[in-house]
Image (tube, rainbow, N blue to C red; front, side, top):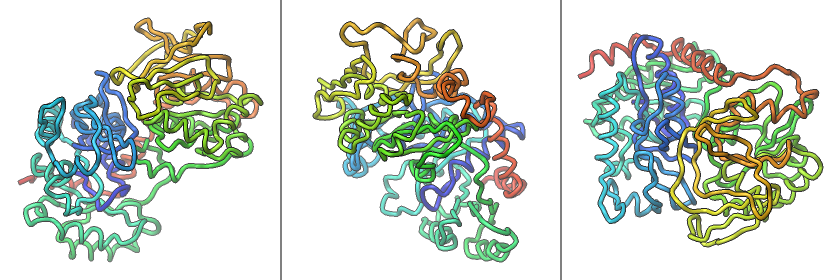
Length: 493
């Protein structure tokens, strides 16, 4: 288990690195995180929902993702409530207080469900199919006030009999206190599970930390298995919303400028990683009207709360800026909730999202969306202008042409369905997450601006991701004592 001294210390990325290293070394690894809190989710091949980080780690491990890799997913809907997704299916929404007060038991349809039992069963099923399991903790392992209700950190490690490696972030400061304190705050039994520490995100000459390594080993009583340098030239899809704060926020001269509208409940922002790495493009996130008007392409992204974010776009002036930009020639694309917003109206007669029953949309597409029904989650294949595309869907509601608007689907799916709407080459929407990973769609989007692009070569995102996993594995191998780690795993007590 990769456990952490806090959030955003790099557990997910180190776990992905170990998944790839174990694969390279001839093993059959798989990732596992009992409970995840994230808006950035992914659809499994069975059409179920898990956290994006475990899907990325599964890709690094060379295996198909499965709900057993992340059996419990909490998707925040507000500051106090989250949708609860258990074994890939939503089972309702809970406020944080009642969720944590009740601990491991939750009521679903009048039946009591034992969440601890569910996540342990998922781990057991996974461990019967793969070896080793690369587990990931959540947040800090030292939240002692939540110890009795914790489903994901040391209690999960106890169930699995896992060797725990504690990861600390030296870049944020206080790494000695955070590593030592996190260990000392454990019970004696849990402390014995911690077999080593990793110092992550080191900047500068590693030789300057030689004494620090020795001091940490003396203080913590376990080996320092690695001091991993900070990197900015290896790109792994991130799940934590903290990653958005590090992304570009304004236009750049000389490239095709793509603005992603910064929604309050923005979800699945990894949809844009492929474009962000494309050398033809400068991609940035903004809710500034001036920056939206400076873009060549505006993307209205997915959201966990379509109606609430649509209200906010009207309040902050972004809705008017998007409409004005399109009138002046800017391409506008909507994905999932963004596609819903681009229509004439969004209706919620059954109050799926809240109290608002109807809101006018941006009016850029002649479609109407009605919320309701079961959440649709599935991986999807189809054709765009006769060329194959792949992606996944995670949404509630249906979107149809309104009035006498003609049928103008963007995609024809493999099962005969259609998806999305294309009003013209500069105005379209789709429910398909991951559509931008397909070169054929990226080229379609960028074609009107090709002369201004610095490089005209198509971008193969899948090959790029595989290269990045290998580079990440090489980086971690160089700075982590893999021989010592294997020795720990082989002498497991």
